[in-house]
Image (cartoon, rainbow, N blue to C red; front, side, top):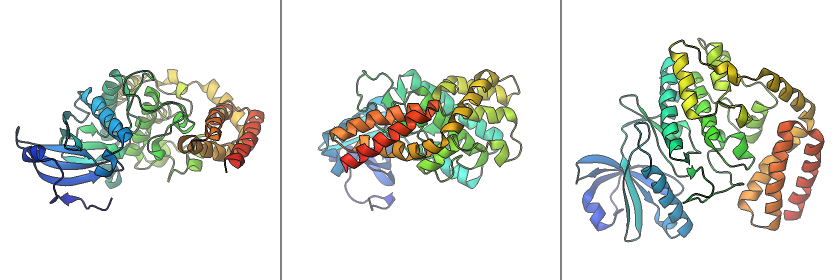
Length: 372
């Protein structure tokens, strides 16, 4: 899109809605929709309006995805989640209104270096509380990142953009995605999602831990985050813990960060509620209980197995990424085979079975050649 942000002169809303929502100002846009700030004349308050783009509104799939976002957002009521107001589908224009949050996006705050460590931890605790409320409704956000968090003028973080959120129950209503679909922002995709497995609550915890790392250090743990950066960061190298990046970070906080974004979701802190409680205990100097999540024997075993498999894992990384993309975007019989291989490959890499990794890499190469 080339439309600039700012005051909007053209007619965006249908006449009845335009009479109610005035003084539109475009404040954001994305692949499917545009976001405007407006004045709701009926209740005399500023609102944010998300409108599905005209070129997208003709697609029944995108309209359904947009409607699902409305369903998801309407179920959540929490001070740290942007509040839903109303849904419109009139004269071919589909949009919804929500709370307008006056403040800054968290990525801007991180870039400006405005947060002290204790302030950052407090902010993440509130985000954990909001995410826990989302999970209590059976919803996984799947795209938690600083760009999807606005901090208002009172310092309260608000989670926004539920465009790819999903219901945790795979058989539940409004479900549009399934195993094998890799959606989200690549820099924040958990390993299980990169491998084509479905996201769960611990996938959101992974993203919360990455955000915690960023608010503490001002940096993303995987740098510019190519696929190689991410997997090498997890497998080949020790990720630099916050205490190695900035001063005044204790070992306990390092562990809290680490146990949020473990490679294997089974080793992570299990929920946003627990993560909030651990951070709250750290903030007041009480026992966090983090040690019970640190299974040193399992970590040593995992590192040893991965060490023996290193020559094969590098090849697996390339095939892993290729097969994930192939399974998503291709519609041939080879793509279904690739999706199966993708999941098998991730499992073999994770348990350090280098012979199986080597075999699957060869099979994956033949799939690539056949599809090409």
